[in-house]
Length: 183
Image (cartoon, rainbow, N blue to C red; front, side):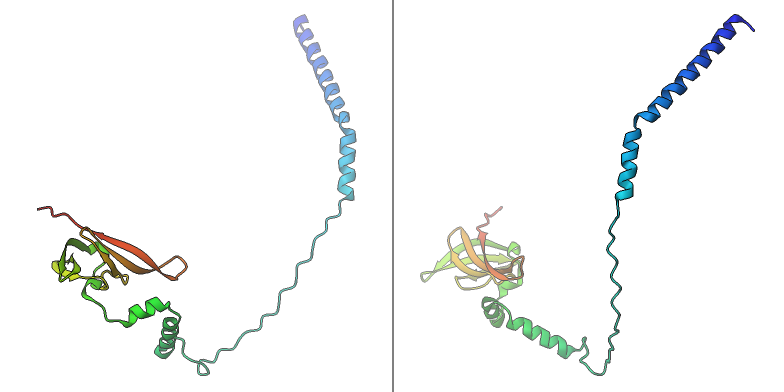
């Protein structure tokens, strides 16, 4: 064997011995921490609440001949009558009166094209579809029970009844502006 090869082998043996000594020293360094962790694990007694037993199931019997058919028209009519009785008084009055021609159109389909005063009474000229209507304060327009409350030379003010987020019927103002002719 050559001297160089022998020195290299000696160095490797020394290096391996030092590494083993270093690693064994690291293992003893945290021995107190390991002992404390083992003690803590031994003293822990988890408390687990037992699961409640299931409640007994008692099946309900259903006799279709004993009750009212839930899909009968009589049952549905009763439900609709109860719903109408619980309606807002303003809405009940609106449902009781006959519909007027401009209520067949939504407000975005109705245009104010002018106004005219006849015998001291102000009228709005409203175009819906291909027809022209003359409307005065107190008449209705639009599909949300829009009652005309004011007419000027440039606009028509209405009071509509709409449902809010909670389902209640509330008054809501709306306006039709005079549409300038494009011809």
